[in-house]
Each structure stands twice: as C-alpha cells, then as structure tokens.
Amino acid sequence: AAGVIQSPRHLIKEKRETATLKCYPIPRHDTVYWYQQGPGQDPQFLISFYEKMQSDKGSIPDRFSAQQFSDYHSELNMSSLELGDSALYFCASSLENRGRGTEAFFGQGTRLTVV
Amino acid sequence: AQKVTQAQTEISVVEKEDVTLDCVYETRDTTYYLFWYKQPPSGELVFLIRRNSFDEQNEISGRYSWNFQKSTSSFNFTITASQVVDSAVYFCALSGNTGNQFYFGTGTSLTVIP
Image 1 (spheres, one colour):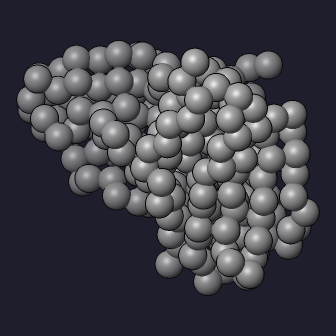
Image 2: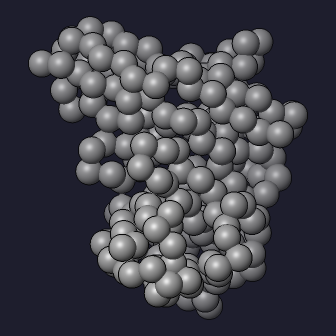
C-alpha cells in the first residue's frame, strides 16, 4: 500500500538559508499534518490542512509557511533558518478527520540539520 | 485543553518479560480518540491502534493489548513476551472532536534486552 512520501529525507542548510520540505499524502487522503520533533522530544504540531485549506495551526514560527496544493501534496517552507530548527519534520495524512479521530499515517520524516 | 502524560520516560525489560506502558490523558471533549504510535530507531512513526472514547472494550492484537479506562482517563499498552524488535519509543496521542490535530505524550523509550 502507498504510504506518505516525504522529500528530501535529509537536508543540511546553513543559518539564515531557506528550506522547502515536500509531502505527498496517501492517495485519497484529504488532510495533511506537519510535525516537528526535536532530539529526544515528542512530535510538536505545526499546522494542518484539510481539502487544501489551513485547518489548524500549532506552534509554527512566523518564519515558516505551508500550503497544500490542488494535487493534495503539501510543502513546508522555512526561511531564515536557525540552529534550533534542526529537527525531524514529519508529514502525516488522514482521511476525513475533522474531529472524527481518523488515524494519521506518518511519513519517514525529513531530518533537517542547520549548521 | 488537551494533554497526554506518559510518566515512564525509559523502561528496560529482559526479553520474554511482559511490559505495560502507561498513558494518562486530559480533555474536555466528550468525544475524543486515543492512539498509540511506535517509533523504532529508524525514526518513522508507525500507527498501532486507535480507540474511540465511547468504546471501552479492551483490545488484543497478537502480543499487544490495550486497556482503556475512562474512569481513570488511562489508555495503557501492554506487550506480552517482549522481543528485541519491540525496542522503540512509544507515543500515546489524543485527538479531540474538533479540528485536525494530534496531541502527543512525551513518549516512553522501551529497551528489550536479549
């Protein structure tokens, strides 16, 4: 079965650079989530989209933005990168959540290292 | 406010022992959903189980079992006859009846010693 695809898997950037992370949800899934997981930390919710519209917003810095495109893939854009942005970034997708508690399936993550 | 607490930070057991991972949650929603995810050393988050707040039936899947008790706001996870491949970080998560967001606990790192 198709899973959530994230690219790239690893990314190294310098401080103040920009980065774009991509996420391709499971086919027919209409909801996409972005999470950030620092070393030894639990995943922190950044933002979610339902049917290409922003649904919920968590602790996403103003330097970050995200969108979901017409083909349902999503991109997380990160600017003015800081050392503290180094983390594992997960994308997840689910079908018709909107408070129905459908499980989310996670991608393998993008490991971002800011040097 | 939604909150998930996993008080056990690290657990070590010897192979074939049983182990229970605790999860306590807080929510004001009358309908909510609970999940367990496994994060092996390779890093991906693997979905294990979902439970509705209105379904308190315990569930068993092979060596895994889950005990959901609304009275104590707990959703504990037991691995029977643990194996080395069970070594991972296990996260309990909560989703409410509005919005699209999962609230994760801080995770329990399980090490199964051969």
